[in-house]
Each structure stands twice: as C-alpha cells, then as structure tokens.
Image 1 (cartoon, rainbow, N blue to C red):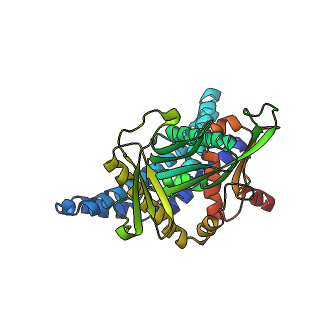
Image 2 (cartoon, rainbow, N blue to C red):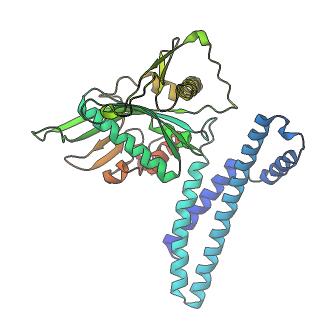
Image 3 (cartoon, one colour):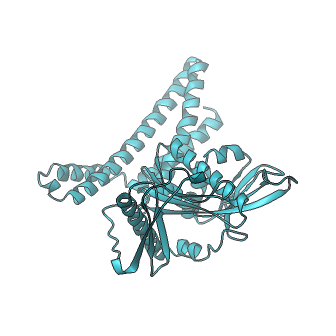
Length: 375
C-alpha cells in the first residue's frame, strides 16, 4: 500500500477514534437498548414533550452508531480490495479503492466535525440577521450579497429558508434582513458566523472606479424549541404594528399587519412582516425568546460573552472575516487564519471550510496558523 494511502487510512482511523469517544461507543449498544425499552412503554406519549425529546435523543444515538459502523466497514472493505488488487496485479481495482478511501476520509472528517456540535442548542433551527453598516449604498449592497451567500449555503445543506423581514436600501441592496433557517444542526453550523464582515472591492457605484471598504454585521440566534423554557413578562415588552412594503413599494399591505416587539429591559427589537398579524406576532415572539436564550448562552460561555460585549459597530476593528475582491482575490477569517482565493465559491455559499476551522479552533484552543507553527 502506497505511503499516501497509508496516511489517508491513518486519518480515517483517527476520525473513527474521535467519533467513538464522542458517543462513548463501548456503552452505546446498552444505552440504545434502554432507549428502545422506553420507546415501547405504552404510557410514553402521555407526556408528548418528554416523548419527543426521548425520540430525538434516541435518533441522535442511532445516527452516531450507524455513521461510525458505516465508515469502519467501508474502510475495512477498501483496504481488503487494495490488498487483493495488489496481490492479483489488478491496478484498476486498486485505483478505485484508493479513490473511495479519499472520499471516505472527507466524509469521516465531516462527521467528526458534526460530532462537535453537541452544545445545548446546536441541533436547533436558527435565526440569522444581517444589517448593513455605515456606508450607504455600498454597505446595503454588501448586506444583500451576504444574504445571498447564506441562502445559497443553506440550500446546499438542504435546509429550509424563510425570510422573516427585510428593509430595502434606498438605492440598492438591503438595510437589514432576518431569516429563519431550519434543519438539523443549523444553529451549530451558523453560530460561528456571528460578527462583522468586511468587503474590499472596486465599487460598481463609483464612476471613478475606486476601491471601497464596506461593512455589514451578521448575528445568529438559536430557535428556542419546546424543551427550553424562556419566560417573557408581558410588562417588559412593547408591541407595535405597522404597514410593511417590499422593494420599490411593492406588495404593500392594506392593514397594519407587520409586527415589531421591543424588549424594554434589554433593548432587543425583533420584527416580522411577511405573514398575517397573528402569525407575525408569533414569529416575533419566538425570535425574541431566541435572542433572550442566546444572551443566557453567552453568560454561560465567557468567550462568546466577551465577543458579544465587544462587537461594537459594523466597522473597523470589529470584523471577523475579510472578503477582498480587488486588487487580489482572498477571503480570510481573522479568528482562525483560514483563507482561500476562491472568492466566487465563498460568495456562492461554500462556507463549510470556514465553519469547520472555527469549530476546530473552539476545541483545540488555537488557530490553524498557531497549530502549523507548532509542527
């Protein structure tokens, strides 16, 4: 077996070891038996919330076991094929098995990262807010580019994307937009995107073709499910209704159906303007609870809390990532030092590598650049 393939096998084996550790593979069969016994209890659904929670926990364990065993089986099968092909001098069999191992390495690495998404709300759906920073038309256009980027990313993941509210820019782009993105681990993946994003390019709105720097902020909050209790005192909120309109004054509502809720103690403001007033109120309340829950998560996590306290305005010194389109092509995350020259791919939603680097950073406590300097 070639040295390159031996290294790939070693990487897959390392991923398998980490997957086994994350789910405690030695006790997994016993825990699954316990889950199955509880599922067969005829009184299980007397408490629907507990039953749903139990079913979700069971499914997570089932998926973890199946993923581990599938990767392990594929690894052993392809190693045997390579050994058999080498013995019989069948280069085609060897080549096919080696290609399969390369793909399996990528799959194992992805599943290893997904196993890190074990925070209290990581598996939940998420709200994503985008706000243009100072800079007028330039920042509004940049905000719309970010919105497109995240929608493309979510669609590639197979997630459901719902526009909750949008405020168009005066000349182009958007001043702000809020989305609900639904799918397994949506919050866990997207939470690393919270922060200020900086764009450098030659402005299409500048007749002198000068370079411009624009800023927009992205903030991500988990959708609070039924198992997380967040109480909101009615005396602490102010509810306003207003008429909403789309870009260019289209789709103007004939009634004041849009809803804005202000949480007075914290100053949090949430809006929804895409459905009926009743639905908008329900959506806005869920968004408010998610924001309040995020604040609680921040208090539990000193690092995240410090980042939120220091986030400041969408401008210089606060950015987490830079997107440079001129004079050269580069997207660089300032937290992990991960970078790529494929700016088009990133703006088309190829964000997994950035998210994975941030997840790995939270586990290892060091950036990729620092890790490389240790080698």
